[in-house]
Length: 518
Image (tube, rainbow, N blue to C red; front, side):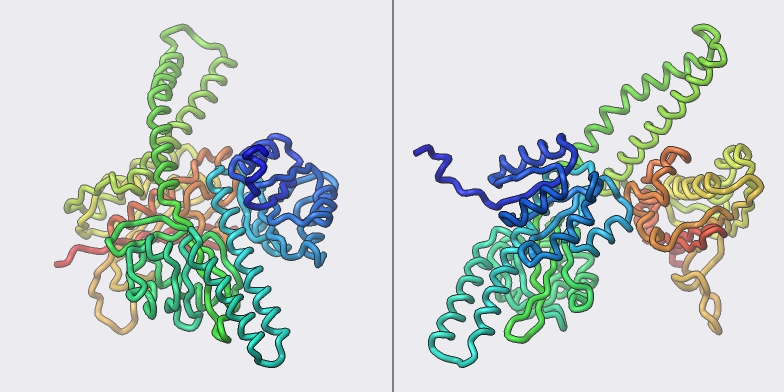
């Protein structure tokens, strides 16, 4: 008998996608990892296949002819035979509303195209692990609920079920922890969790993630656990994890609400993606560096053509040259922005702080952007304040020119953009009442009269590659990285940056910087 016939597939996965290239890529990748894969191009065919032989997990595209992914998922969740199958959406639609709709119809996760194979595998493994644990817990609860009288037989059955769950819990390669919902204290963790954290079991049990100093956002994780009864399950939260030896790891956390002897608990399943993130960052840095040399040569060649040293271009040639120059400059900005972000993230960029006057900072930023304001027929009004900062003037100038550039680009001809600075005693916009002014902070505001920002976009615009409108990258020439860089620069100065906005009336960006101690 051939050796291959002795190998059983890790799981049965059904892939529904009307694009043959995606089907072939996912099928080859999953088959190589030991999964059994069934591929179909129509939603109706997928539904028949799922009902005939229910798979362990479904990868589902959104945009398909005849029946879209949301409709397919609704049919799956309406059938007792397929209701419990986890469905992961894979789509090119990246809007928040698309993702919300995917979760509303019963999806457990949403991956945006173009996807990374490692990310797809990690999420599949996470959801299969959670699903198997859920099935075992559900089966255990059903068996226990059927027992009306406590007897030796029921006790043996319960012990056997608990032993089976304990075996899965202990032997899982994924770090798993169980914490109480009420106060987020650990009541059990598996060996994989101990290996990742570097702590012993006695050191972990009874403590919270905050008390063990397991990362920067432990308080937020504890609050998320306590809200599980209202919010339900959460999947693939990226978290910076700190080990006992202060080694930093990047992990994905999935949270599931479970009941242990009548006590609401959270089942935390982690997936260590530190190495994947490192390789991703190295790849981005390498590609960015490799792009800079040919881009510099291309820009030089375009400048030479524009100088007419090689001959005079006709009107059509000048138009083509202008398009090429604009897009090359945009690509250079994107590469530089990516390099800046990667350096900041890896700690390779250090601020060179010195004493610097805040009024000079605002004046230099305004003068640097005056030509752009004139081009867009936008008026710039500056209201500086004389105060000394301990800061890196180049990095702060980079931040303010970026914010002014955005304000100008999204203003209409005749609008006004205001940049001003005030002294503040608190970390908010308004000073406290009935207290003497003891300035501890400099508050810089950049206000425009543009189109404004929707409320659901106010937080995500400071993340990588996030823009209010996907068309902005084409029409306005942005990269979606500027605000992420601004946030990192301000954080390096122990400051804060945030935005307030009203649709149709404009936006105000705030930069709060601490003043040096006198």
